[in-house]
Length: 320
Length: 314
Image (cartoon, rainbow over all chains, first blue to last red; front, side, top):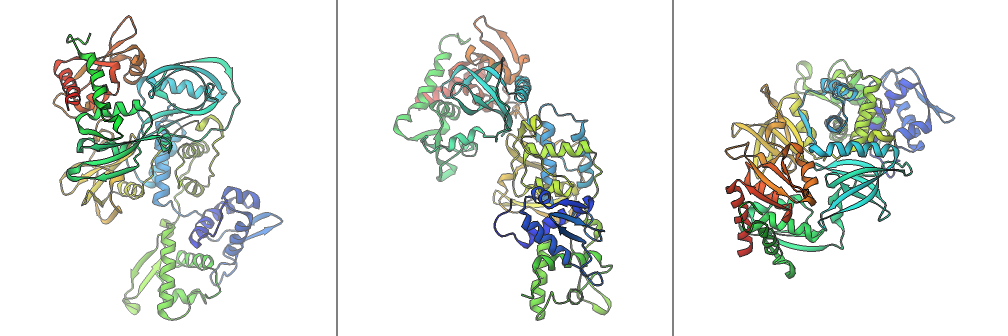
């Protein structure tokens, strides 16, 4: 539903998609028009009545033959605006990108209706080489297939899930609701029996999966909530890192509260810390290119982790 | 105000420019649309320019020409109906449905308006399993212009890292959450890849400059999807890594069973991992913390040990 004042551009642009459709239909209940175009009935009526008054000599008042009677819109012989306005660049991009992304989803069929529809779209919009790459790791595809099947019947699954913040594998019972890809990672939104909450899990961290034979209630597909949104929690602890140029990518990869530029491409950046394990993993990967500035108790965390990992390399060359 | 609703005036102007068989001057337009462009010449001109900009804003292609003959030097305006109207895509019902599902799965901001133009409506998220598996596609201001220029083979310019780039855009690639434009960079004379979110301003399409896309350009191959394979003298180089039982299942799923070279009785596995790009390999293996150890080759193992040692002694 549109609220507030609508600009002349918005109103005209909406009229230009509405009129060709109405001309094809002939008559449509006003309520259906309003619902389809996300407008109030009053706004639809006002704009259509205004369109009916438009015209050029000698066809003043006759150019667009539309009237509303007892809650139904009637459209007569079309003279103008019989075809919709061409797609704008953003609209064309929206269709192409959505289509190409959907073609990469598991189960898509290149020779199927979407592939054919996209070929027709490319013929009209030009061959553009827009490529959406959604790689699926070898073992993840099968898991996604099983999750997808479970969603359609609200099947409860027993899974073993690796939790990076505790670095441990635990057994859970989940009812999957939605699978999505965000920034190259696959996630499943599921009802978690243990916490009684809806949680987002990384598909590649599901170690094993089997049906329990039980089913939950079927529900509407929920919104996608990617892992990075969890960092938005204001209650999380913060760490300030001094990053040398080779480590600067961290600022783009993870949510960051604050970035202070220093000389020579060095930055001091403050991050929310989802878990100490996350920080350990980050520090050991960045090695000499990072230094913990604050808080004090994490200043030696990197060296502690390095020592722990090095212990695996002690002794013989085979690592045993 | 002249008492005419702006939407009415815009609609009339649009109708007039679509219907005319020859370019019309502002004086002729004001004459046809009696009482709608009134006042002094400068007032009329300002109102007309605002309306012309509004029509272009919603995607109406308005052509302009400078007239000759009796009205030499005066601008004339018209709309080419073939360019104005949406080409009929002749979509079959199942193809329409597939596009609706794709838009429902990805939810682009302009998706609904685009579907309306195709005579379709959006379908809701609870239309069952069709949209239970989806993907997020980031939206950036430069993308529509880059796609359009790539499709019409026009050169673009954009500011990037404080320099003005002139690029023939061969294609766009979305990988791991980032959009890249792959194209021929005029200044460097070679194919380069730019991150679209790092473009520091508007993408300008040069309507005067066109290019031919060389055959066999594969945007996907602009750079390897696995950074561990990137660079180095031997792209096929592999290291063998022993992974603890606790992380073994996850690593095997990530790399695939083909990469497992040995299985221990306790559930540990040895995997062969690309290591041409040593920093990317090191980053991957250290992400496993003390649940993994590099067995060989010796130089790769030594590089990881040196890295860790430098952290302890720093």
